[in-house]
Image (cartoon, rainbow, N blue to C red; front, side):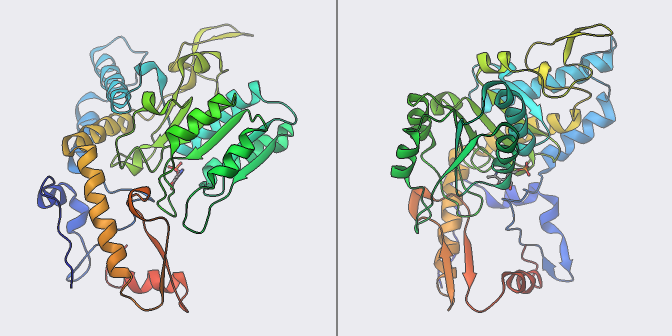
Length: 366
Ligand code: PLP
């Protein structure tokens, strides 16, 4: 029987010890085997401690108080933003907007950039492998503004039909919005090439990085996309914080999303002047501890190394596919080789997916 061998470059025992939840027994003698990281990852002590420290030592509101704690909290929050900007190689921390999650980041773009720049008959290109969060916001906008939505098909190997994409680009879309890595099939899309093609056709590009940013090195300047969105909770960070990266000129032109405190530079009874970026898009008291936790998560991932994480995930996913293939009646979906990230989905003939999940759960497997 083949065994799962971690790469020499990653210290699995040390990493496992960082995650307290992994030593939990789901029932006597059965430790949890957590295979549900596309939904949300577990959190290492480094992230839990950063948030705990903030609440124990530095808790205050940010950007408003003139006192020691307020200034310390503001510095911690802004420092987290700077580290996240560096993580994705954003030219400036001002281009990193804190949101609640990927979903909110996409809705922000739809409701601000979309409403301002799109009109009846305009085309948005999506793909058939999008998460609901990169589908429904565009459906909502399309029905409001009478836009057209077209979808790049997925072939039997789990890859995007790029010929169909090129044909759609000839229709001069205003936006192409697509995932960098599918949460269902694990497909890693050729995002850099697709971005260049769309921009050459005059479209703006939004990349859903919810599954890519956590799992391999993503350089937004190399990708060249106009917008990149992702969630903290899928990259060892806390829930309640996500990111919208945008091209500076676009963010500056976009109207605010939500109105309230912090997003204004000047306000009178009947008018307001919007703040500069990133604050223009961060109305109200943000998720301060969560942003700080996400900064700690980025440090944590970098300490292991994004290339090392990606390489180890290849080892694990190839092992999973090899062993699953030994089970009679199993069909595995998604592409092979380098075009697949650390995800595998499968169907077991004659057994409902719900039952498979419940039986695995009986052995502590999430
Ligand atoms: N996009 C992809 C590819 C995802 O996998 C997910 C979540 O599973 C999302 C978007 C939505 O993320 P969130 O629920 O954090 O907004």
